[in-house]
Image (tube, rainbow over all chains, first blue to last red; front, side, top):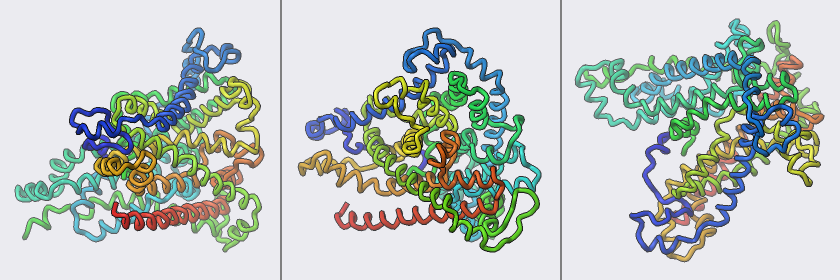
Amino acid sequence: MTTQHVTRPPATPAGAPPRGGAAAPRRRRRLRTRPNLLAGALATLWLVVVAVPLYYMVASSLRERSEYLTAHPLSPPMSPTLENYQTVIEGGFLRYLVNNVVVTAATVGLVVALAVPAAYAIARSESRLVQRGFTLLLAGLAIPAQATIIPVYLMITRMNLYDSLTAIVLPTAAFALPVATLVLANSLRDVPKELYEAQAIDGAGSFRVLRHLVLPLARPAIVTISIFTALTAWNGFIFPLVLTQSEETRVLTLGLWNFQGQFGTNFPALLAAVTLSALPIFVLYLIGRRFLLSGLTAGFGK
Amino acid sequence: MSHTAHHRPSAWYALPAFGFFGLFAVLPMILVVYLSFTEWRGLELPALTGTDNWSRLFGDPEAHASLWRTLLFTVLAWAAQTPIALLIGVWAAGRQRNRAVLSSLFFLPLLLSTAAIALLWQALLDPNFGVTQAAGGPLADLLFLGDPAIALYTVVFVLTWQYVPFHTLLYQAAARTIPASLYDAATIDGAGRFKQFWHITLPQLRYTVVTSSVLILVGTMTMFETVLILTGGGPGTATRILPLYMYETGFAGFEMGYASTMAVLLVLFGTALSLAVIRVTRFRKMSSQQEGL
């Protein structure tokens, strides 16, 4: 269900005929060539709404500060400069970046390590305990993280983890776990029974099945949930906000917010920080758009 | 001994995940209910105070005002995001080259974090140097974030900008699974584009409408990051929605017990709202099945 962007068989979309597809019957081509002007106009309008702010973000980040104050905000930068990026990097950006990478990697590692065996058990075990646990996990999809910040704060302070990166990782991973497990369990349920049975006849124990059958077969789903979890952790704001306070443990999102106070009205520097914070994900988008999008909608794509 | 029992994984494979989730997600959900009956100032241990927090909540005019704002905010966010995401998603489901290129641009806001988007819009809407200022005309006179009468709508717009791409993706994926034969039949029957959209596309997308609506409603009802960064709840209390009031009560006023009461209220409202959506749409599903779709 989450690999739909990758493996979706071609189907004619709603109100959107493929114009003269080679295999399309002539009848359809004749009947449906009128372009959808209204939808096209709306889409173009939305394009402006999306593109102008993003252009502004990049253009302003490349302006000299004096130019920012005088030039029209949508004019191209007159003498593009990277000095704002330098300001941001000298302002502690790299530390926040490293913290973010650590938190993201640890969260992904923890979620994959917990979700893969759990999904295997959910797909293959007949234990009622497992199925009940899965139901509970799915009910957990409805728990909003914001509503739990006070008890999570209580628990983290009691565990003496306040103001550490571990404090961010634990609840972030817990809230990514239901979607991750759901996506993985669905992909493992699609595996033909015969494959498991063949392994059993060969005398493989469940751990060997996990290593030699489940892991290779679940690889696309593992990629999807890793991306989903990584994005959640990378962009997370709530848990870092209430569970950390010092500069040593500051992650990117909080760092950006902090820059707002630090730079005051130095918007070019602030926008350079915003641009830099999105750069890693933008690169990921260029490399593997399909994978990124599948990770974004993990578990919710119908 | 049969190998069926032998090669099936034991329940132990699932227990670490369940235990971990129970500890950091389910237990907090239970604890927040408990905490709503206590007084806790962040240090020491929570002390039970019975229903004090709850009676205080019912008598707190600021809580009432922020709850009302939250409901308005949530409904507005849903009403703004759903039609745009639905229309663009259906449009983007087309296989034409220009649609593919445009939709890859549409998804770009997805790459930015909530914090990044809030800061970007703060710069864009800045009353001195922002884009709206430079645009001139009536736009230049509006204080999008500084006027209590419009700040809430501005936040709704920013949320729409942020979340439409995600919901567009859901609709796009679902619209691509609608069988082409339905449209062919309708075309032969002489149904126009609008009729086709209304009688084929929309009923076929009903599950996606439910999923997307529930995500928007519950998500908007509990989120406060955008408001915190964009307006801090101001000007005055114009954008102080309940989750933000909860955060401020808990982490600025250190009245953790009272803040927990608000958290419980939010969860109750969120759940009720999503159940209501599912109820209403189930009714629709039955009627459209009778039409033989």
